[in-house]
Image 1 (tube, rainbow, N blue to C red):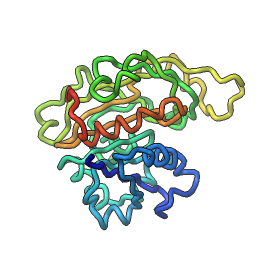
Image 2 (image 1 turned 135 degrees about the horizontal axis):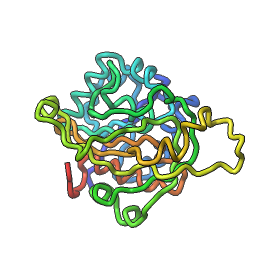
Image 3 (image 1 turned 90 degrees about the vertical axis):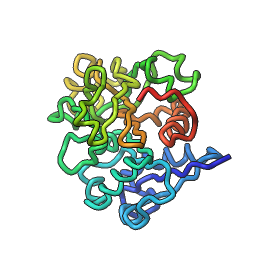
Length: 264
């Protein structure tokens, strides 16, 4: 069995996934290291720039950090390395802040995905559990029947991007020349799961973390950039624990490690 090498970015730049900013990364590391066909390595910004991701199949930029900090950790050269890595066939898996960073919504981000973001003004709205509705037309390309037979799943949302997938997801010819691929909506936000305690202090802007404000916006997408595959998730797919089996399947699809129907 051929192994797939997966690199997880350490946003603290220490190489040990220490600190609260790396909580998401530690959960992902724990999930993936249990898979015999996956080889997991940890990269700092410096190591990424030195190695140029040679021998890596998929780069994960997890949630838990701040986009500007992740941008700084990678540096200008590191961001170019990531773009070239994906353009030449590498995979990218971004969660929450890692999904933000992959878009072209701000100057200096990775610009792997041409997608508009809703309500950046209240981006630090906090979060909580939210139901996510799977899109049957696109989820089957990535996930097994264990997941595709489900209509909705609970996921932890924490200030991730509210993506606005363009109609039909088709890029213009000019965008295609820049490497952008068709955007496929894998899941959308369905309904907020009300906390048992209505005085939930983690929700900073409850009026912007609500069914009215969030329902219908894109939660997860898959697309391509050049020859590489990209999967972005606004909510934390790794939480709650019952969803963790999806992560290795997404990694294998992103790595192009299996022959799957590719609608991109």
